Image 1 (cartoon, rainbow, N blue to C red):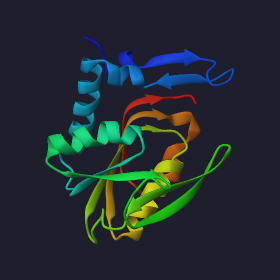
Image 2 (image 1 turned 120 degrees about the vertical axis):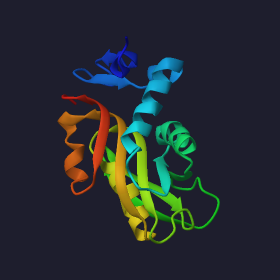
Image 3 (image 1 turned 180 degrees about the vertical axis):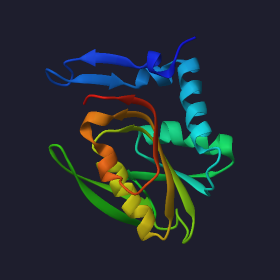
Length: 174
């Protein structure tokens, strides 16, 4: 029987020499792999008391929306700056080579709501850290953060210290 990591394609030397790129698109493209990932995330949340799932653009949408659906919860979007049509708040954060800004609608999270964040990958933790700040500024409480994959060598968990973080697959390297 295949494991979830068997559906991930590893591409050496991409985007630069020495990097092992973990391609999650092969998980999504395969119905068994995609089902296994979504079911694994649902299982990670089965005993968690939460009100809404939040996913970051773009693969957080791919995994977060079916998790929310299967668990009978709503789904809120965190998007790149300028992509949401209603009133938003924004949070900027640092990338390896520059900065980025994420936004959320001001009415997506209600004060006191318990939030589960679902995304495809934790690397440095920057994107998820920015999403947490947005959620907390709106009065939400992040109660669980779930990833399909984790690149442990980039130490993203340190950026999310104090939060309950889980990953279905952990790669020790970068």
